[in-house]
Length: 406
Image (cartoon, rainbow, N blue to C red; front, side, top):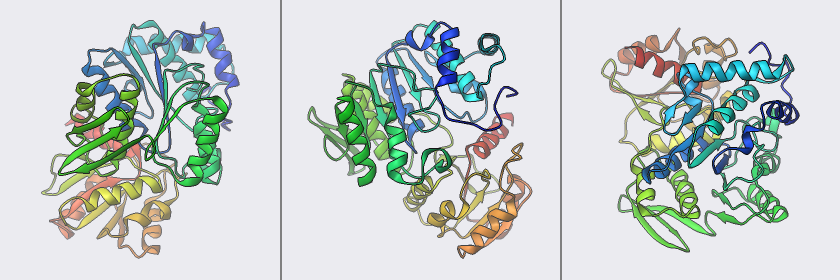
């Protein structure tokens, strides 16, 4: 963390320099599936991993951020990286970097590449950290497949103020001749992605054109030129997961995987803090989600609407670089918002700032010193309510850490 520059400038120069000193581990990875987009990257990756592992394949996975332990970011053939291995890799990266400027994400991504290049596997799933063009993961010249989840507004300070600009950054993972599976997009985002693919000669498989996904009689139905799949609904709850499931299935079909892998992608997937049902507390129905941008809020709203009708109280903590009103606006049907700090995060919105934004939207709002105090208040004032803790993956991680410590 001490190496991290005060002003982060997106660039691949530092990453290329460091990887060269490490012997280019990014060139020794198993076949790579590279995933970019605004929302749904982690869920799509988790479904892909579940499907591939069902076939007996060994699968590496790199994702960010972590929820409870940093080790979650680097999975080696089915298990989180061990503490001794992680320590040794980070020490190696720091030594080889030789005091040069590097970002936290670049250094840890280099460590991930080292780990995955030295451990045998059949596949390597890489999730973009930020954007695409200049993301530290975008150093693999010839992945087996690229995947772009829905593009929406997020990180405008780095990626641009228009959907077209943001889509251009995400499309930066498209590589010459490499197939790219694309979720349904807004028209302007899709146009940018199609132009990028045409320039690279990359075959596109776009939702609504080359493949279709939906639900019918409580089942998931996927269809492409290969045929139709009739599958269980994904184990991850929420209507938005249908689109993520379609992406994973389209990717699996492109990789030549069969129906058994497709079914496992739906039934064996596990991905915490995505509309995750927690054990009841204080008699309340508790849910947890790490969503933190407008697109995630819309997905949460749809997910709540799909549940049996019940008053919903939101317990919200958000980082200071997040827009409050655009996140809270899709959730205006909530009975109340209780704003809380994020433990250990000094760069979080003060609870009163969140509460003020909620009141501006016409929501009832209050503050609490922490999540347990917020739940105690809900138990007193809305004893039959559904509670959704949301607004930040860092808040979700703190909740899961507290749960595991019980």
